[in-house]
Amino acid sequence: MAASDEWTTTAERPLAQSETAEGLFSGTYVAATSCFAAVMFLTGLAALAVGPTLPTAARDLDGLSLYPLVAGCFVAASLLGGMLGGHWADRAGAQRPLAAGMVLAVATLLFSGASTSIWQLAAGRFLDGLAGGMVTVSINTAIGQAYPERLRPRVLALMSTCWIIPSLVGPPLAGLVAEWWSWRAVFFGLAALTILPALVVVAVMRSPSWAAAPAPSEDRPPRPALLVATCVSLGAALGQYGVSGWNMRHLLFTAGGFALLAVFASRLLPPGTWRAARGLPATVLLRGLGSGVFFTLEAYVPLLLATERDAPPMVIGLAFTGAAVAWAGSSLVQGRILEHCPRHRLVVAGALVQAVAVALAVAGTLPSTPAYTAASAMVVAAVGMGMYAPSLTVLSLTHSPPGRQGYASSAMQTTQNLGQIMVLGVSSALFNACLGAGWTDAVGYGAAFGLLLAPCALATVLATRARCA
Image 1 (cartoon, rainbow, N blue to C red):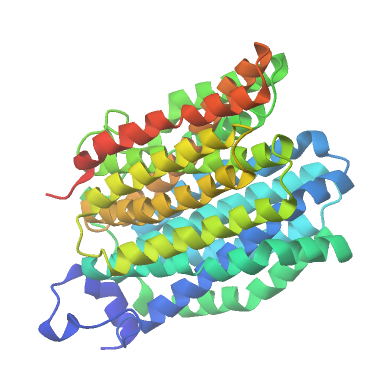
Image 2: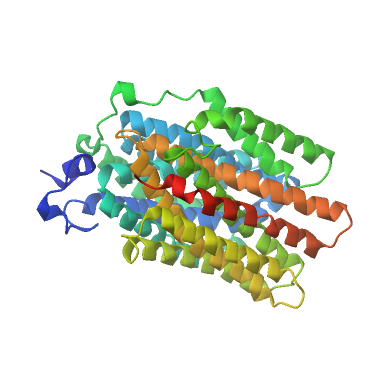
């Protein structure tokens, strides 16, 4: 049997005695591992390189006032892309949404690079979010279909490791290109780098031997209504824009966004998610809690360093790079050294490490502490996420019935983005309320950071509800 045939069946049958020693790059798995690693490397490079160029692009397009919308479009659209990609993967196999996402990513980079207005750039970022959501969910779904349970922690660790080099070279290289040449060159250059690997992925995954067997019709999740997914994505975009200011217009956008999320988001999640029902629902909820804590720190710590601590840009850049390396290193440890540790215990450990990071961020608001204290909070939080996120992905795949890994992966992607939006939104509201009450910026930052201890504590308590039987 060819290696590509093994890809479709290994996860669905017991392992033979000779297979127990096989690794990620053995003959059985080398094709899948190499393909997934290349996709994740390019995804990481594009995600980390584009971010630093967006403020320059918004300024050149006379759209600085709409920058929050441009920055939030990607996250909002990835909700829709992840959900659509997950259900597509369950019905037709992960290879089709993965290939489609790669092609769409190249097209949107070209579209964004050719922007003549801020609205075209926003549309490009929205389409890129669709592509990113489809690719991420398809990769996680394919991992569930391609690898036995014993190898999943290792391959997820490898996926995180593929972000190390992009995190080291992507942001500074993109900044230099934008400064010395043009921000458009960043988009066009990334498109050129991605075209050939995208074509390879499409060609390899067009092979019938890569097609996963579809789930039985009685086990398939219902096809989600496009209107529901669109409303959730729109609500996320409105919320992202609304929390960027503190006036009546922004409050109305925030209220409208959160109203849409409250009405429609639960329809995209497993029943019982909001009450942390045992199994997949609790696992999905935990992903939202952990992601909300991390990305809120990632949003506010650099702002604190730049506005309150007068930290040089190099310190802020090192915080981002250190966080990316810490996440990958921690993920590698959980996948190799701690691979036999129960996954729910690693979730508890990750949540506790995140609580330490929150304490460092609060301490970093004090004038008597060095700026590196706050910067270190991002690195410590990334260590927690390196244990937290892969463990939850393994648990979600374990809890998923055969043929429904795409549904579980899309639900995880949805709550990751919802957690980021909602936790960041509540923290932003508290921060702006403190400023509106006449308190200092430092007090506002401290309150916004201190609030993050609540989801950390909740994750610690609920982790046992995600454990495997």
